[in-house]
Image (cartoon, rainbow, N blue to C red; front, side):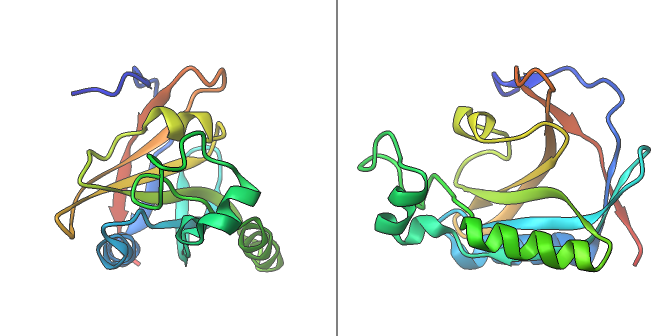
Amino acid sequence: MASPHSLPQSNPMPLKLTLQHLNLIRQHGSRDYPSECCGILLGRSNGTDKEITEVVSLRNLRHDPAQAQEVLPLESPGAESERNRFLIDPRDQVRVEKDARARNLEVVGYYHSHPDHPARPSTYDRDHAWPCYSYVIISIEQGKAAEFNSWVLADDRSGFRLEPVEIVNP
C-alpha cells in the first residue's frame, strides 16, 4: 500500500550503500526495538548518485522525554514517545556535520526505524524532513529487521518519492 505522502518516481538519483552499512542500520533498529532508532548517513553526492561511506548511529533523544520536550515539543506527549518518534540531539547533529566536513564528507541523509510499522514515511516524517536528503526507513517487526526503503522529500514538500537503492561492494 502506498503512503498517502508518496509521489510518483521521476528518475531520482540512486542511493548506494554497502551490505555492511545496511546491516549496521538493521542491527541498530533491532537493538533499540521497541523504540525508534535514528542516525545520519555520511558520504558524497555527485549529481548522478549518492554514495554512503559511513553510517553514524545516534541516540534517540526521545528516550529523555524532558530534554526532548525542550528541544522539540510533541503535540501529544502521552500518545507520542520514543516508540513512534525520534529526535536527533542538535548537538550531535552539529558534531557529526563538523566531523564530516573535516573529512570532506557531507550529510547525505538520515535513517530511522518504524517498530512494527511499514518502512514508509508518516505525516510526522514529512513534516520534519528536508528536500534533497535521503531518508532510509527500516521496518522492525517484533524485534527483527524487515523491509527497508529510501525516500526523498519533494522540493515543494508535498510528499516523498521512493528512491532507488543499490547495494554495492566496498
